[in-house]
Length: 133
Image (tube, rainbow, N blue to C red; front, side):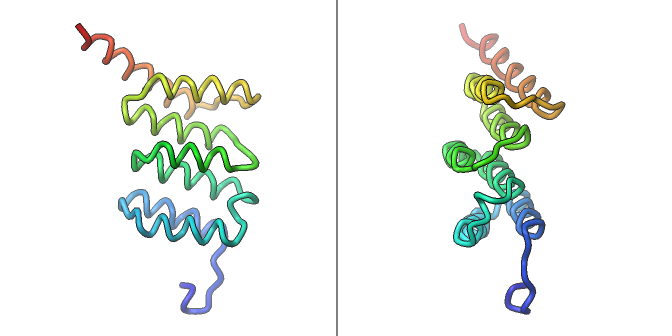
């Protein structure tokens, strides 16, 4: 698209990041991350930050997802829900709960997706408790 002279906007970048996550294309995701940072868009557009947090969380790169979230100037329920879901997906329920508590301490209200993610985290914690001798 860029080689064809088209300018990419934040919606296009967010869609590309979502596609990278779906296709498990880490290399392209990293390239887009670099472009977004070099253009100064990460600090300005929360949708792109959320898409990056989601991309890394889905790949299991939770430290990187957390780092991206920490670099954002503005957080919202989507930002935190993506990270909470990532920890839950990796059976790290305690970290999901920690993110949930931090989200609330930052004054953000959970939405339906956040509650769904935290319930999954609690479920994975219950499974771990039931499995342990």
